[in-house]
Length: 315
Image (cartoon, rainbow, N blue to C red; front, side):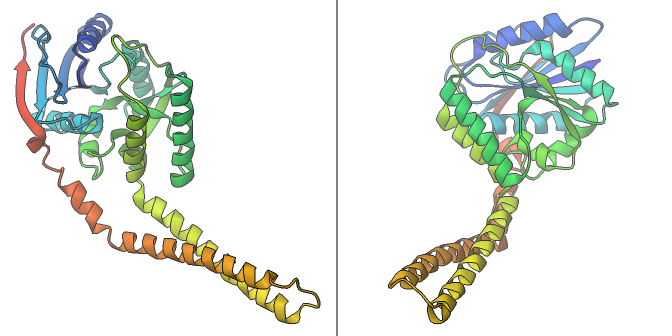
């Protein structure tokens, strides 16, 4: 089989070298052909120890773009290479995507006749309690706002036939896995334990998690706005109905506490105005959705993100 790997890297050269060694030890047999697209996300230090990696394409970005943009660049680059291969593996360079799980993803692909993308879903995480709790809250909020269960990251196995479909997704430059989740491209998840980092500490801190969460939610901005639109409409109707009931109670009830009606009307009026503001805000954003489309169009030409490209085809 012939494989391509897209691996974004930022200040993680030692881990990258070890990851590729492990991948080769695991897969470089049975006549498997391994090819690597390594996207250097403008690392602070020059990557000096990669010259021995064979069949590799090194893409150096002009400036730090983040993990998701790096994957986006790698996908577009591979799509334009127009080469034959069986599977594309997308994974991070730090070892937390365990290369030994690649076989699990490939086997799951084969079970489904290469008709679905297979993501690795996390059984266990290795971070601290605060991060785990924050990640748990993120998944709950994501499900509440989008109605979708989201329990996987970048680590995935893609049959070649779907790469072009993924590249053409309008939001793929914002968030790789969330874009596929929203699309009609078929996918499944395969439970995998998170691996241990090869070197250093995780770069995914709480602020990074927040940014990651906002990017994934931005993919569903229309759905989220519609949910808020429905919620605000319901709030407006309940508020108005309650005010009517209070006035009815004030003029027709046999016993009313002095000042009670006035206080309730003021409170409910304020709440109704808040819901009205939510309603018109969501409506205006939905009507002006061309702004979002223009922003996504700005990233259609991925090449302006690239500084240099180096190829290493030696054995």
